[in-house]
Length: 446
Image 1 (cartoon, helix red, strand yellow):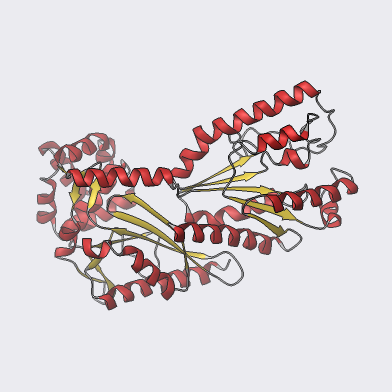
Image 2 (cartoon, helix red, strand yellow):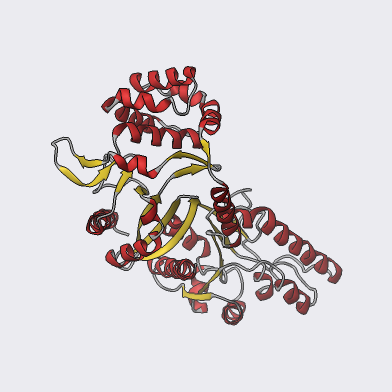
């Protein structure tokens, strides 16, 4: 992907969002570090909206996607009054660029109202550069930006030097008004510490005291109504019923390039998710951990006996079921991309590799209870191409496996066969396109 082209496209999309909001005539402002906007957004953009507009944020996002010629590939409600959206935009024939928008209403955490959207919007003003030129977007009044950003950092127990500089800059523009905001949440001692940190631009003492500050803001904030508690509960249940992460399995014979493609694919699709985890075969086997030696003779070891083979797949079944409940499902709820290199179904294609000599009908029966991924990516290439890349098995076995993987893909739900004989960039782009399409359909259905 051309990084310059991608950055230019994101900057253009950000300006298009601001223009759309201006056309709608709604009250809005951007919160957080806005120094590099609109041309150089560093991450997701926090946009504050009133309650009436937040109620129609889904319609607004569809208009945004249409204007920037993008596809909505992620939507998650990470707070009661906040929706996080990701729009994928094509960049030539490579990986897409991503526009990430965090639409925020009232800032509510753990059933407590910390800052209302109306307070953030009341004294908003047009952002200007150092020359006094309007930048095309609104920002909150300095004292409101100070308290809003401070509460978010304290509540996350995370405050970097760069974030501290942003807080000090906001404080310096309205020190008296900013200091008054501290009375709403903090004890006298904490207020003195925060005021000194902002004025002296030294936030190290505050970082050491973040747990205490977090407890203070939650004690001081007004509890929301019973209706608000119901809303929080509904949001949590919705996240549990409809996880926003994605479980992807990559299959294919030796030489198809699974590991190489995965390494290139992860940065191409990671912006759609909060985090990425890679696994090899089992949920309990994170990829690139353990330093195990590569398999160079997959059929070199003798098969196990009939009884040992049955015990083996019973153990496998337990590993997959326990791994799903303990690791994969919780990670999916937290918007994680789970990318597997090989999975249980490899046993059905190549039992000899796993030294299995039990009845195949039993192995296929176990496959039906193994938690299935959301998407299968099956890398396929002509046997002669695979043999040129790796000669770990005879040519006849490579031919058999190619056919077996294609037949397996025909039986699996939501499986995509990808031509692995193409140049690597094209293979990665096709794999990314399959993931983007899956995310788009799932997000649209919700």
